[in-house]
Structures are given as C-alpha cells and as structure tokens.
Image 1 (cartoon, rainbow, N blue to C red):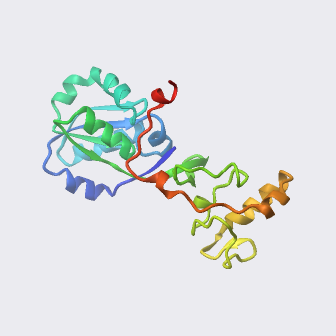
Image 2: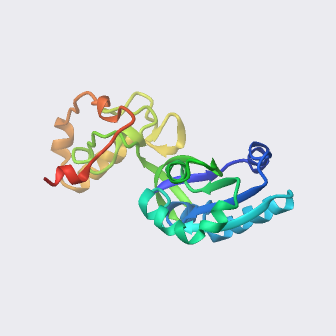
Image 3: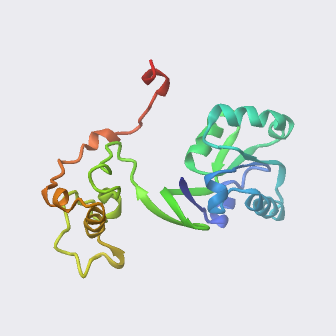
Length: 220
C-alpha cells in the first residue's frame, strides 16, 4: 500500500489561499488506513477550511483514488458540487491527485498529503517500507527479504563491515538485512545455497521513469 502523511496544514492553507470553494476527495483504501484520507480526515479538513472562511461544496471518499475511470464514474453523482468549486483538495496519494488532474483538467487540484513509500501495515497505522519498486525483483533468491530496501545501503551481496551484533551501523533499531536473509535461508534449509549465492549487478534500467504496463497486451 502507498503510505501517506499529512502535509503541514498551515502551508496547505497558504498554498490555496486564493481559492474560495473546495471539493474534498479521499480514498477508501491506502489513505483511509493511513488516517490521511478517510471520512474523519475529510471532516477535519472541511472544518479547517470553513474556519478560515472557505466554502466546501462537497466531500467524497473514492473507492480507489488512483483508478482514473472508476473514480470518474463515482464522481458523476457529485456533478453540481464539482461545478461549484474552485479547487479540489485530494486527500490520498500522489497517484490519486494526478487522477483528479486527469478527470478535471479545468479545475485546480492540490494534494493534502505527502506520499512516503510503498509499505506493509504491521499494526493499525504503523507501517514498514519493504519494497522499492525497482522493477527487477530478487526476492526469489533472498528468501523473500529485499536487501535493496531493507539495507540502508542497498547492498546486494552482504553483509558489509558495518554490521554490529546483527544490527546495521546506521541504527541499532535496524537489523542487518543480510543477517535476516541468512537466518531466513537457514530456516528454509538453504544455508548452502546462501553461502554459494552471488547476486548479479542490479538492473536499474528496469526502474527508469515513467514506466507503463499494459496487462491487456501481455494476455494476447
């Protein structure tokens, strides 16, 4: 899921100070789980804007904000509110913001959140980054633990000389990714494979931006 964090509200108000009316758009998936774009957050934003003399023409939590066509269909029921607004504030990730830009090219659109990383939710509103979206996955070789992300240095063949009692030299709160991989491979009975493993240089060209995937063509 895309982990988002709220932008500084004072700065956001300064950014949109020239607009008078607003429509608030959230997301029922990632942003809701992050506590940045669900019903409570939209209500909080509405109250903040109204307290600063602004008008909120409507609010809506989209099923999946980054799905352009789906969100466009969902918002048809809010046509009047959207026609009456000067500005849309999107309370989801950057992809959700850009969906709104595509759907409403004639209306100003601003994000209420910062998109932080792709992460896993370990507890309610507690998230860990576990994937760097590098486009060339090596989890099949490393016991399902990604050294590109879990190692602050992104070392492909570790551990480095900074490992201290199984922890990373960057912080004692970070367990060395390669110690984790070694322990994981041991539990799987693949210690020999681990000792013989030498990963090839990373194919960073797979993450050159912007990327596109057409799953329909792949099915042909």
